[in-house]
Length: 369
Image (cartoon, rainbow, N blue to C red; front, side, top):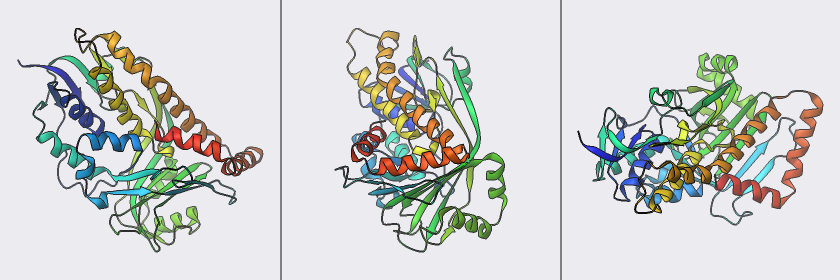
């Protein structure tokens, strides 16, 4: 049986990116998982990628291959509390950066990664485990391979589901992302170019499970009426332009990210609430850190050396823990419906909006996840 330098378990976006990046170092990589099938028309996911993620994908010759209508830069963001008062405003111009994020079509990104993998001479697709010096787990937390590790993976369900869909608005989005924190739900409109340039949004709406399932069951017209009530018409009249998809939400982090001959990255290592749009950014930052550590290793050190892998863990521990605390804290703060807390948090949004240094700090944390 052929032996590889690295086996990557999990062929999602993080796993594919890791396989490509390691292959560029000249390592032989076995990628376990099937390519994306079909045109991806039913995939309504959209990701808000930060500058670090874009730079990584560009270095792998994937980013520039994406169709222009599959990536929409966000120049401004408005975050609303649940009091109807002042919104928290983030501006790329104010932060002296080109864009706050780039909203990226998930299906298009998967397809370009698959295309790049087909031309990667050091990557081999496999259907089962192979012999490898290092096993990198990038699959979801429920994967059978993870259950055999002593990683201490524990998750806590939020009792919520996220609803995703594509929308078309009656007026242009102006490359402005909009978000509403309303007890007990969080709704985000991500500006996009598909299906209608300049007027489309990716919807991510996190709600208690029972409420989410009720909204999934109603007709499109009723769902659109609920959207109008939730957004107050600020984005114009919104209509569904796709089916609705949903998934359960949880928070979790592995207690141990590596061991002799194995390492975790992406969803195998951590799970966060989508309210900050940082889940995939955290996973791609894992890839960048792990590849950098491997590239800089001593010539005599084996890929599966636990001391080598701990360098990667040290790089990722602080930013990952910080993002988990921020997203979990925000969710729990806005889930509380008592009047004093509601007033306090909405006054807090207004205060942050007037403190430019604090806004720059918050923006930097999101961009450097």
